[in-house]
Length: 317
Image 1 (tube, rainbow, N blue to C red):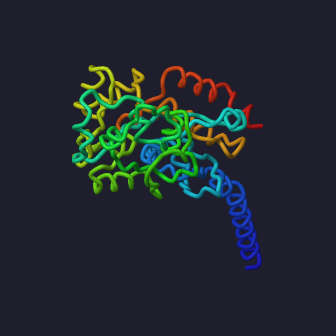
Image 2 (cartoon, one colour; image 1 turned 60 degrees about the vertical axis):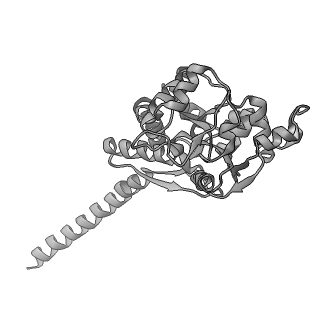
């Protein structure tokens, strides 16, 4: 009887020790496989980031991802959607993963659509978007001001989002954009345009097109631009897929195209490197489907070099 009790006691001790080892090694290992991503208020790129995550998890079932949207809290990765200053570029470890394009939109009832046959040129777009004192506006008469009367909408953009990228494209800063500032996601700008017959804004392809039908949303109109005839034919009379193909292969005046990607905040994390490699080599094929552009060849080659051959890890030590 005593012998049986001793055997049971030894068995219980072994089970306890084994459980402790599993917790110590297995439990912590699972914890280390959680990757937090801070989107920094840039929700318009969240659909493609979520797509990458979901497809990646099909091949790496042990990884979990946590999406944060707090400017004062850093994740293992942070989203960046506007090109950083040179000093920031040198001090941060960034891997770009895709591109987005911004097109000018308005309400279909806007008289502006009938007031310009050739389309707006750069000076006219700037006169609509930005405060007057940044322009060389000697010929900007009251007649022209009335002709192009609009209510401009942009986003309150503390983290450097699409509105910042728009201002950068025109070599100025966010504070110079006229009009009404919208809190929250860029999708809320569309809600204002729908209600305002003279509303005007730039917004991302994935928001202004219906990604199921691939057509421009019927409650919106693209603002005519003074660009090449062949570019106009594609931009104004095609589905999003043809528009993306055009923008991936040509630079079009007055259409900002910006790279977006990830800032690596957590150093020496092999799971992060694995995810970023997958996004570059396997995730690009999902970009167009969700309204984003693939990286251009030069940028892709630079990012490829960063994540291969331990080059990225060496910058994180």
